[in-house]
Image 1 (cartoon, helix red, strand yellow):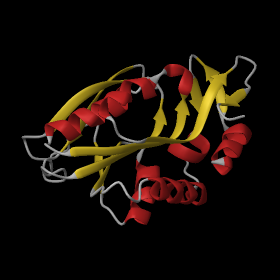
Image 2: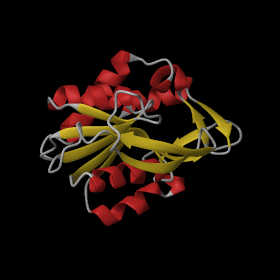
Image 3: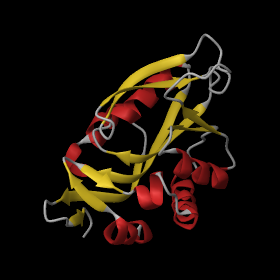
Image 4: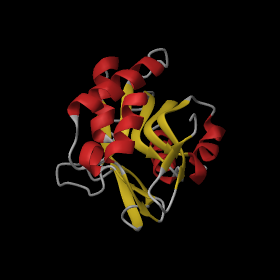
Amino acid sequence: MQLLKDRILSDGKYLGNGILKVDGFINHQVDPVLMDACGKELAECFKDSGATRVLTAEISGIAPAIMAARYLNLPVVYARKTKPVTMPNTVYLTIAPSHTKGRMVELIVSPEYLPRGEKVLIIDDFLASGETILGLVRLVEAAGCELVGVGTLIEKTFEKGRTMLEQFNVPVVSLAMISAMNEDGTIAFLDD
């Protein structure tokens, strides 16, 4: 998606150690026009998936998930990283490493919002190592639901996360696929 790639090139910043700073338009300050366009594109890619629910991880995945779900007319469930008092005692919980936090994080979903038998589309901001998305897949499986696809805004192809997802035999779509981030700050896309 050229609009997203252009924004990454103009406003994204490579910080080293595999970290791409996009918090000025995706995950701290959100550009709603860009997220709307990305959501519309992801919805088009998954319109025939049969999804009945969209699942993401807080907080960075919420904006793209909501916008995709808007066009698919589906509810969004996000895996929380801390359990609020309003959540029931019995929950679906897994842990996954967070590259940007530098530690393991919990991913928690209430069974109330991920009932058995749902067809789940996972939408997130990044596909890198694939560990967060694998955590979301574990939640889908624990709930007795079916994974029907994975969509992300940005994929860092050199981190091989897509390979980890091949075992699920579902479509994996990334709107901007980065093939390299160099120490001089340059970013290269797979299809350039």
